[in-house]
Image (cartoon, rainbow, N blue to C red; front, side):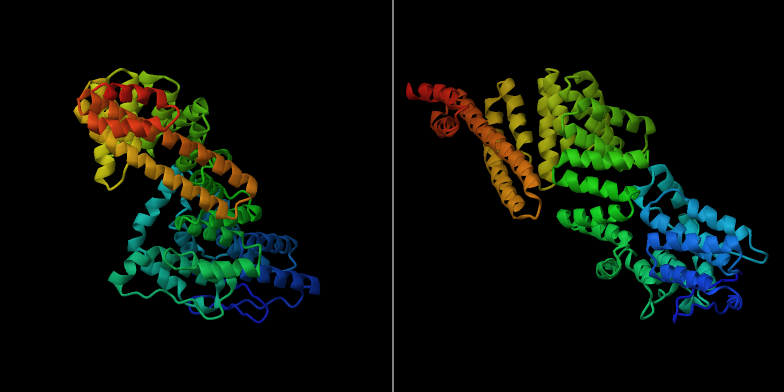
Length: 521
């Protein structure tokens, strides 16, 4: 069993107990300056933020190198183990902290065992967005074996935990990972003691389901260096769809830990949600530069480039995702088809949309894109089938898609299926009305937000263009319904449709031809 060298903080005496070896007595010979350095490092550890731990490690290793403080070497091991856990929690994917802890432990005279800490660290998952998908998948393998061994590790950690920060931290982490097994085994999680130092408050707060936002917020307020608290607050805010709050927390997290790639991915998600595509692309690109192979970041950058009209740039990223394979292949082929369609590469786009459907067989957006590509390839009957599938899949889930209805009617008109087309245009027209209403509400929400004025102006301008496009499609739907009804000879029903279309300046002349035709009868 490893002999724990406790981390001390003034009045908080952290002593090993039970299976721990007796606490070493602080060498009375160090100078006052050395003792002050040790106390400063101990205080940083108890505070517990990522940068605090890094600073503490520097002090311990300096004191160990000079030989002025015999306890400093073992404390450096403890801090390296804590940093190894923080790397996994935040997705700071180097893994060097654990390697460093193993190296430092190997220099200690036998017996000196850190085995239980290495085992618990090994089953801690890397934060999803901070490492490549391959590395995240590799971390699942030891986790799958944990159900056979977690109780033994827990029994080894428990003695002395109440007075030992390292043991307490690892026990909190283990309990969080093993929580699904507790009910079957009749185990209660180790309770966080009253007055626990910030290091332990943080670890308890980030366990999924812990409702730890209040604790994390308190940590951040008490010490602005707690950038990782801001990161988890931002992640929680994004999950609640409070994107502006998420942005504020994530920006603070990156100010404190600039190499926090997972925060860049989440910030990209924020800007993609607010349709600020240039900012989204930049955030995703920073994440991809830091962590190659993180598919969410790659897909996010490709989507952002797509919306910016940078179709060739998007395809370069999507090509690489196809080469890497495995994750998000349905979405990858969809977006490559989307971009190839806009570059008029219709045959290649068709290959991609069919590959996407193989993986996303019930996705109405895939069906709709397949319909557009079929129209471009002059495969009109197939286009009708694709748009009908899109309507079925989207509306079958309680949704609506104005374009799917409109273009289903359009494909039917191209085949002179007037009677089939009418109900689709009749459904599309009020759908576009509702779209316009929702966009106007979105503008009001933007103006009420605390976004800077320049960002508000850009978003509002984009929404106003969308409103104009929806209004035009509304008029086109009315015109097409009127034209189809006139071709069926139902002039009375055709008249109000044509009149509504005529109210739009771009459709006025065309609608007049229908009204003139009706007027002759």
